[in-house]
Length: 175
Image (cartoon, rainbow, N blue to C red; front, side, top):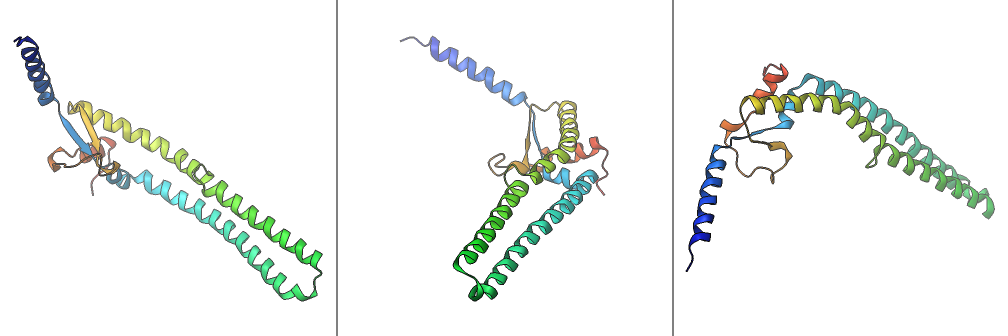
């Protein structure tokens, strides 16, 4: 019976295990950092203003559709079948326009999300650079993001939370 493969595996495990112990791990809470950053509030305010303007436009389209239905209902007895069908066709076209507007603005790849990405990108880069500097200063091998969801971290000891260091690196006072 040859024990050399077992010995090699045991040595590899011991060497690999000692390497793991030497690695430092930490985590941050990017949501906490974002909410503390003064630029984030400015970005959120701008997005809220844009969103409200776009919502007003969508509501205006919906109101026009309601008025068209109301007018059709009021005049229904006076209209020929052809006139009625034309009005229904106009209403359906306006509904389609409204749906397209909502999709174009608030859809998955809509203008709102594009604007959000455009406004947040510089701030995210700034925060990422600060995270990288904190990780290097503290010789961290891995830094998790607590805000990424429950599957990212199962348990986290607050001693390893480096969010405050990132805020400090960004020059943001905790208070």
